[in-house]
Image (cartoon, rainbow, N blue to C red):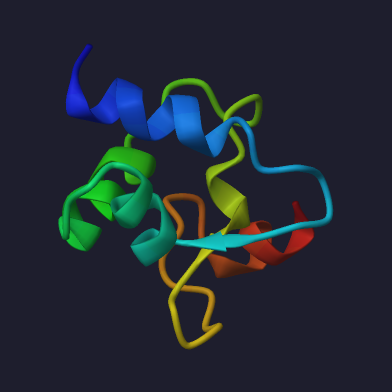
Length: 75
């Protein structure tokens, strides 16, 4: 399984109304590749079934979103 697919598999488990962080996903994958996780989510071909819009920065800031931050907030 590719790194990106491992990221998608974890991300699809985020319940509606909840968020997680890039760091939390990295810890679950036993790595520190926070930027690689962001990059994988930026290319997420399974959105919105894999809810990459529910992943935020550790500070609580929204971080990036391929479709723009307004759409990230909307989803």
